[in-house]
Length: 412
Picture (tube, helix red, strand yellow):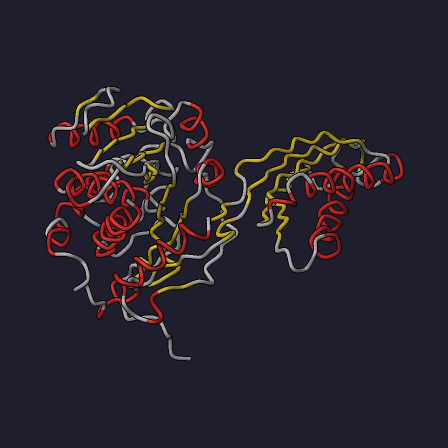
């Protein structure tokens, strides 16, 4: 089958305004600087220092005085930063969010800008997100006359976990002035350069996690009648958990229950007295919150009771589902269609069971999160996210700035 997507090597960049195209080399330089210095969640000290250095160079002052049109606050949720840019005319308040953290992955790319931090890598594009946000800040500072109202650009720590969005909200980043809508993007190697994935409603899934220890009774492998085999109990639980999606969840509502770890046993002739399971649950429909976790415990309890075992279960929600507001999604879609300018450029069916703590922002105010295609297989830039050879086509950086700026101009 011939792909209907645009060829990344023939993407038309004419809709990116010259002043933003002129920023491209700076965007690449900023992104590569950050890529070489990746940091884990809530430890983004060098990243924050670099961003603050740029803000100060551009005349943005560290203050909470709302009469200062170009200002920033730092140290929010440890390493987070919020930049506030007020135009010359009153109007609404729009926020733009970018995440800053990296992953505990050893980079395998042999590029001049590869990670200098052992065992840590920007393997999900957050270095690009921060560079796009910096470019957006720079442009808006130079063009305050071109929009109304106020833009707050949020540099958020710890998206990969345990999550920096919620503490930033709790510390007031959406207040003073109060944010009316928020947008954000994710560079997306599941889509080619020249495409934008945007849709109303659920875009990304809730993320829930569980950890369970099965408590049996160990013994000799030749005398199983004297034991309660935790491995057999655990195996029955793993199989039974698959019935939740198959038989308890409405087929119209997508969901996933995955057991990712199963650890038990110490020797081939010893029946293990304990087994440990960990896993994750994903779903789009907010009404399912609490339901799958309840069914998981019912199944574990039932199997253990039938087999004479007991259990200890920890279950927690990491992120809720990411739900886009329809009006803000339409704003992004209309703007993006002007930038990519091809019928195949806007991808509506772009849901993923991946999770994102941007969901907390979208629960607090209306908004839209979208995917910006960044893959270019012809340049070997199509490895998936979280892969040790992940990288992306940096042409997407100026496209991201252009979309953000047009959203600001259209919204404000």
